[in-house]
Amino acid sequence: MSLDAKAWIFFCGLAAVDVTISTAAAACPEHLQFLESRCEQWQSHVLPQSIPAARGNAFADNEAAAALGMKVFYDNRFSQSASGVACANCHDPEHAFAERKATSHTIREVSRNAPDLINAAWYTSSHFWDGKVDNLWSAPLFTLEQEDEMGSSRLSAVRTLASIYRIRYEKIFGSMPDLSDTKRFPLSGKPGTPQFDAMSEQDKDLVNQVYVNLGKALEAYMRKLAAGRSPFDDFMNGSAKSLGIDAQRGMVAFTRHGCDSCHSGPTFTDEGFHDLGYPGKSGRPQDPARAGGMAFASKWQFSSTSKFADPPGRESTAKAATVTGKPEGFRTPSLRNVVLTFPYGHDGAFDTLDQAIDAHARILPGNAAPDAQDKHDIIEFLRSLSGRSPQAPWNYWPGG
Image (tube, rainbow, N blue to C red):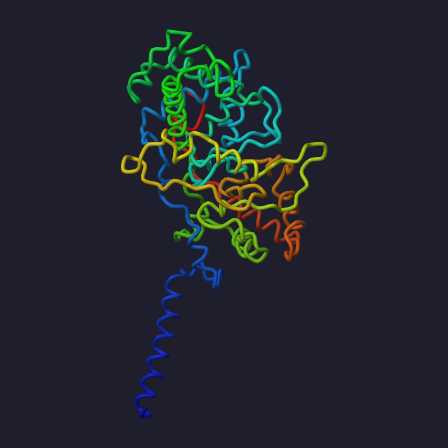
């Protein structure tokens, strides 16, 4: 090879390096230069303009379905008679659709903290702390029948829906079955009870389909609760004054301490399951965590691949999720709106972000505990993740 040829190759190599550097610099605006090599990674954390498509729910973005779901959400007649429990008891609109109790206490106290609903529509693979269901519409169908939570049954719920909201329901989903024959359709019952188990398979399917549609209306409403973009997103999109210097330092400290190893992407969660070694509250039985969720999911009849899920090609185009992952730990919660959704942890063990950060620092290997300045800065950054509130009328009590 001639000297001229070598010189030309060398020059082209320098030009390529220069283009790469120029492109990288252009990709990182001046107000984000403090992020250095992580600038592009941080830009990938900006919240999209729209929430992900629903899985298996052709009515997920139907306004009438959302209005029906909102009615049901605040209606305590869908729980055990005289219990006074509604979905809003644990998902209070005055507290970012979360609750202030460490663990939910409706009919009876349970062992876990109720996840906030502000983030629910953003999850793309599973719901609940143990990921037991793979779609949002079937999550309330589980809760309605839990004896410690709402204490109802699908037959009771379907009858309540028919007696109060039949006209609304039928305008959205079509005709309800005639439930007047109480021998054919008992007043209450769910799988595992003699009343429901004695029904014909055809009649079980009729009841299950109405029950599923109830869940799909609730999902349509819960999707309205997703918060919009936050000061962090505005900052990343060019509004340099949207984030103070403390929060900017918090972004750097967040990555330096490895927080982004689990809290990444636009929702600041990998949606994975991790065992942090936290022993849980004393005096409580061992929580089966993800292992229990996987066992439940393998038998759940309302998954996004079941016959009750709407087929691809209609309004829902998202792929069905599969039951994967290690059978341990709890799902990484989103950090969006996190300052509004205390207490923290699957059992609500941490009252403040300060406590939650300390607990993670003690448990995660190889990560030195943040000093007081870093902790302050990280919390200031987390404050910047509170997004714009859901729009009226979805964001508050009906008629409020």
